[in-house]
Length: 364
Image 1 (cartoon, one colour):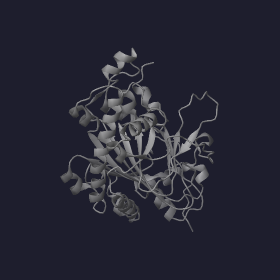
Image 2: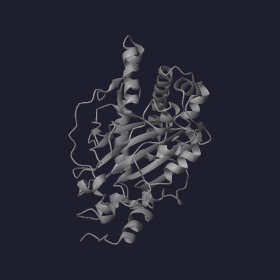
Image 3: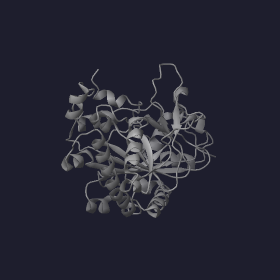
Image 4: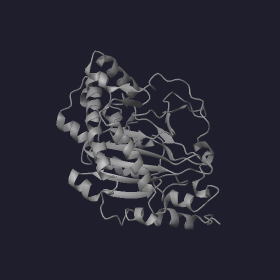
């Protein structure tokens, strides 16, 4: 007989403090979602009626070096100005590496709880690695149906010493090959705006790098839960490897008035593709021209799912504000200059709340 987790404190202790995670709940044999995971009705993800979207086809980055260069740049810019999400193929990251990484993620989360719990916050042997569940469990009214391990990059030797042994080399290769692509995308977007940003500043805007492996166990009541609640990412760019199951939803930024139905688009998995999304930092730097994307993740009762994002984030000491050339051209700054560490602390200090994280830097 499956244990009962009706008591919120016992559930929190089992899932969060002892490091069993959501996978531990599922492995215990539960037949229904515990109350602590039941989302309010307005946060649940129902069946979508998804229309066509012109930027949903993957962008072939190899064409940047051919006669279609201008069309590819236009597609990248258009997606960044509207949805804030796009998929890319021929991105320079070996597809067999991506497949191996997905397998490694499943293997990591298939380990016994005590093997993963060594990386829990406060006891992890390195501050570079943290294993956990949900986003901010001590601040959330309803928990997210997700476990994760987060790996912060400082340099190759520390990553190889401290990251989990079964995935560290693949995760490091994935990050290093992706960063080349991200740097080029950033240069393209700045170039389109007609602003010059020197190499050292570009390096600072991508200076903090984190690789996460996310695990979404099969859920007995997916209609009641979310894998990740609505939010935008705080950094410059996020690179995301999806598996073939899908579940990533992006909010369309139309002028929805309060009370009107929101429109969401699912980003379908595409073999060999990586998903790119604009983060808050790039929206601030571009004075609102490029849009950080509000997104969320649904759960499924069919099979467990993994996703592997790379977060490229400004260095904590970096000052982030609209680029001066854009403010001069626009005649107004829509955001104030902030120290990015302050922005990070605000972001991680609250539960997910859509794009409210941007309010910290917004000029009213």
